Length: 499
Image (cartoon, rainbow, N blue to C red):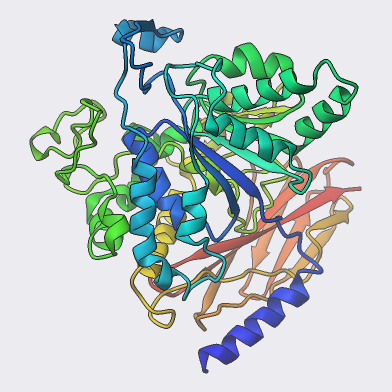
């Protein structure tokens, strides 16, 4: 069938099913980054996903690992115990500069016309360039200076046209903290303060990878406790330097050079050529610790032994993957889990969602609860998705693969009684005309009632246990994978609540 006809039919399926399935809103987001090599790789992948959300800012910031210094040789000692012991007194630290974002956008500009063949919502390179700002970069945790980056974030937080703003902290939170401090200084002594405070607290959310300075602990959490925070202190490691220790062995093939080289890095255009991998010969200026590209240093390295083109790290990628709507309904429900990890509500702050032991999932390879598995369980499908995006950089629409859309005819929230059997009917589509193979599974780490799941390729039967109690919930994932190259996967989550 002609692909234009398929597109019309596929759009009709999307429209009709949207009345039944909850759709994640398109989210406005700002990235703050300290420029470590894993930030660079995270940024390159993120550029290929910028059709999925609305970028509002790209801001250089600092962290406990990277800062510029003030140009006056002022000595600084980290306030964070780990880097205090590692580096002692420094005047600057492993600073990659404030040009690498612009340089990568220039490479993005070269593939932008081809990306538009696959999605009309990719932002223009000119738009991306306009939102690049330098924030608080002089030292770790410095938030006294008002910077172009902090003012950019402040103005976005105060913009009445923006109803929700997702702030990603790939490094420290200090530039975000400075923006909030500027709002406090401008309004705290005025009659508008209560209104502004509530509006900003409701609008902002922060996804932070660890505490990479002390500004969340000492300022944001105390002065702005109502701001929603996703605190990823563990799960990110499945996409970071120690991935060999965190990702189940059967899933690691998609992070090895045999996949990363031919499927993503090599022969996929100028942007992905800049992607850092083991043994690739590349070296980031300003960071003496970036030795991963040296072929002579692959064996018995800090995080294991590696081969050419093996994955190094994208520790910040979970932050924006949380925004990509793949059907798991995780954005508004962070405890549900998705490509950006899974978080549970803090016992001390209802606005903070944390990972760790309380957000562990059962790892079938180790046969025990694993605090990294809520992230690592998705590695294979995420990497396949990355490979498809790499193809979008160079291939025509007809010669590339695009994700299927998985639809369930029943609503995404269903009430049922103990012992009852719930029927789910599928109606899925694929814009490329690929066949879709369905599977249906119980996300047992979240479900609180016993169930039996049976399914074929059109229907699933979910039988609740006779001892299911009122208030129990069951999380059923209807998963569909196409037979394109690479195979792509999407989902729908059905929540069954026991009456």
